Length: 428
Image 1 (tube, rainbow, N blue to C red):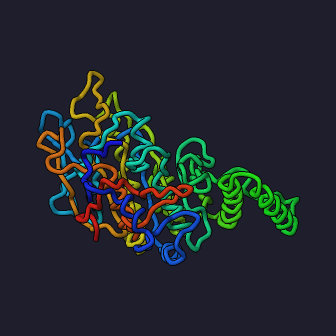
Image 2 (tube, rainbow, N blue to C red):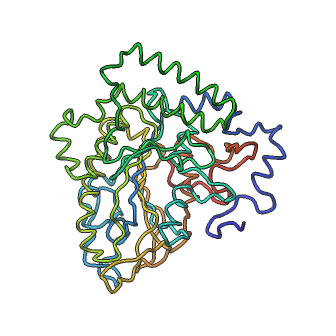
Image 3 (cartoon, rainbow, N blue to C red):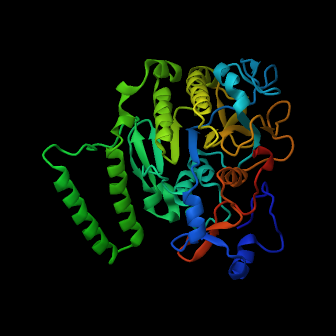
C-alpha cells in the first residue's frame, strides 16, 4: 500500500515497524496487547488524562466557523469577528467561542482524501493507518485500550448521541469488542439499569458470581475477545448503577442549563461535563445535521449558535474547574464544505482544505496552525492529514506513538500512521 503523499515519512530506506521488529530485543519496544510491558502498563494506568471528542457529523463549514473569508468570491454572507486570541478571527456565528478562544488552538490546514461520509467518517476516526489490512480502532477505543478506565471504574469510552444507544463494539476494530463504545442514546442511561426491587443485593451478588464462573468456563472454549467483552459490559453496568446521579436532570442547576442551552446538543454537552468530572476516560458527543447541501447559510445560522453556546460553556467550565489541563478537547468533522455554492444554495463535501479546533491537556493555547489561500479553496503551505492529528493527540496524552505499538495476535502495528508525525507547534 502506497503511503499517503500528504504525510511526511520519518524514514524512506526502512520502515519504523521493520526496524522495531529487528531490534525489539535490544530496544525493549513496548507492545500494547496481551503481553504489554508491566512498566508501561503501570505508567499508562497512572495517567489521569481524559478526552472530550466532539464529533460534528456531516461536515461543518470552515467558512462559517473557523476560517471565514468575508467579502470574497466564496465567503458567503457572514462577517468575521475578532476573538480573545490575537490574530484569530472567526465567524460572527460564534460570539461566545470568540470569548474563550484564548484557550484554544485552531488548525486551518487539514487536507484529507475521502469526500464521502461512508469513507471519510471511519477513516478520520481511525486515523487512516498505513496498514489497512486490518480494521483499526476509532480514537476512543484506542484511548480506552492504551489508558484504561482509570480509578473511577466507569466505562472508559462512552458516546452521547441523538437517537438510539447501545454498545458499539465495531468502534474497537481489531482490539476486540471489549473496547467498544457504550452509547447513551439521547443522553439516557441504558434500559433496566436499576436492579428490580424483588431481587436483593445478596441475590444479585450470587447471580453475578455464577455469571462470572460460567463466563470463565465459556472463555475456555471460545474466543477470548468475546468472553472479555461480555464480562466488561456487566462490569460497566455495575459501575453505572452506582452513579445513576449522572443522569438525573433534576440535579442540574438552572444556570448551567441556561448556559449550555436546553437544546439537544447543550444537554448532551452538559452530561459530557458531568461524565468527565466523574472520571470517564473518553467522552464522545455527536451532533448531527451538518450535511448542508441545501440552504447552507440558513442551516449554519441555526446550527452554529447551538454549537457555539455549548462549546464555549464547556471550555469555560473545564478551565474554571481546573480540568482543562487534563482534558484534551477535540472538535471536528469528517471534512469541510466546498468553496463553490451549489444550485441549492448549499455547500458540498470538501476534504481538500478544512479546519478543526483543539484545547486542553498537552495542547498549546493560542496556536494557529496553517492557513488557506485568500479564497479558502486550498491549503497554503504544508497540508496536514488526520495521521498527523493522531500522533499529536497521543503525544498530548503522554503516549509516544513512535515507541508504543499494538499487538494484533502477534502482529505489531503502529498506533498511528507511520508516515505522519507529531505537529510539535501544537504541543505545550
